[in-house]
Length: 276
Ligand SMILES: [Zn+2]
Image 1 (spheres, protein in one colour):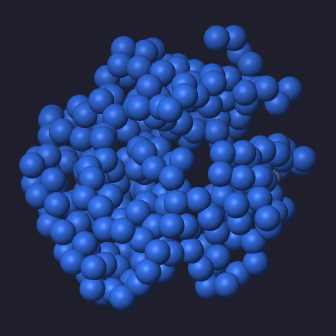
Image 2 (cartoon, rainbow, N blue to C red; image 1 turned 30 degrees about the vertical axis):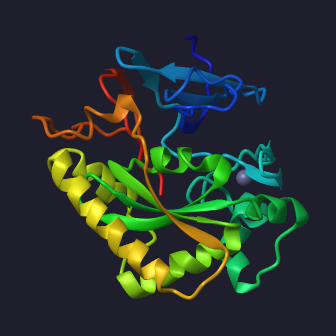
């Protein structure tokens, strides 16, 4: 690669069993780094076991990644930041955060307004899952039908099970709140805690046992919840093979250098992500 400056949008995963191969993605169950050049054109850089990845930080400050407009279940547009501003709220500047459709998702089940495109996205079937991470923490969460597998890959789950299939995104969030209230499962595990857990993950069998037990408890809770519009399911999430080694105990240590500046180079052996 040349010395082009890219805006890094992060690591994205391709579905292990895609209904139709995703355009521009490197293959089933594989990861790619999504880069945007100064002209706004996106490139997917495949990240496989053995890939050499080298980069130099152009600036210490993170730049805004823009926002999304949702038009339907599988239809959304990315809008680049008009000001190329600094990222003030996570990965966005204030104005981009304010107009991002995803901001409205969390209040939908409490009667909050959503525009028609986002409504049609939220009215697709949704899945409720219990995920367990390398630091031993677990959470309850939701995924839209078309994001069923990706949502868990992005968050870096070590083990996860789907516990319910809901008619839409409103029902699933009612169930999610119920599980948090009555089973004490949080809806978020901090990215930094998940990543730190990867230096010494517990044996896979221990995490699987914990996840299985929590998922069973949640299924019992859901069956007695007196809610409608969903069915209880018992289905394992399939972890990407590229993440296996990172999620397994081994002698390893945290990267000792500051990734916020300077130049870095790696040969990838295994890869997992820790989006929140
Ligand atoms: Zn912006």
